[in-house]
Length: 321
Image 1 (cartoon, helix red, strand yellow):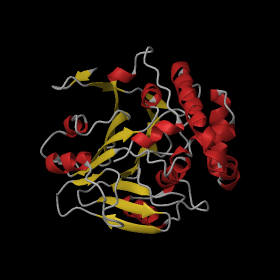
Image 2 (spheres, one colour):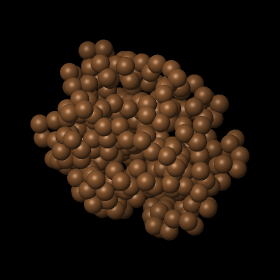
Image 3 (cartoon, helix red, strand yellow):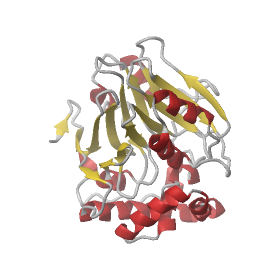
Image 4 (cartoon, one colour):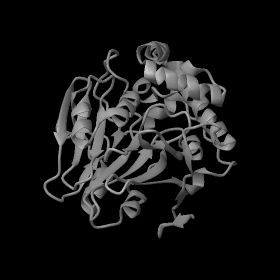
């Protein structure tokens, strides 16, 4: 059911599907459209965009999933895996987005976040809650990695972009978060993995468990980590700046709004505040590991067939902050 806020912004639930073929044809086509647009973005970036084949050979578990999903979707498996490296390939393009809250709740903590990426229209159309062996991924068909995921083992994780350098030998970020969801036994195990793994790119990883004291934002550079935790039941907020590894150099209006009103307003009301929304907001996700509840919503204005976005590599530099 469509929801319209007092400001006139509308959003609606994304469908829920399983990761087992046959895939819903319309969703599969929309996911392929998103993949094609992502691969087109990579073309002007030179050698950095060619890491997909090396990753395909280095990570056999992810390569096997790529091969299986690609056969159903009718795409090349290396192309599919490469598309799932978008976070690392585009690191440093100043294409930053996402706003995340980790809030205490009566049934356990809640993760609430906006996923801001591009092309937002193609992501919104392809978005779905995918039932995986580990739990639920808030993503799309062919999403081999994870941007936001809920584990049956009582935790969830999500990534906010932050540029902290690159390490070609590190684990690609979205594939790594899928690895955490696949293998971590609980919140503490997931937190330790996120804090300790050598990564290809930096970022801010929020980890939430089943108790209100199980909330953390891990500020990551490829080989460095700092963990931010809340004091008691204070809200925990992340946008796109390090706050422990490096002091922010600009004021983030989204962070300021979230920090002021988190815990005082409903999470979805706050995520859809005009001060928090961006032109590249493609998903709203709310998860509670203690109850295993997961909900995903997408902006209504991006869903009509008449809405078509074309984003080039040059366009990415406008999304700072």
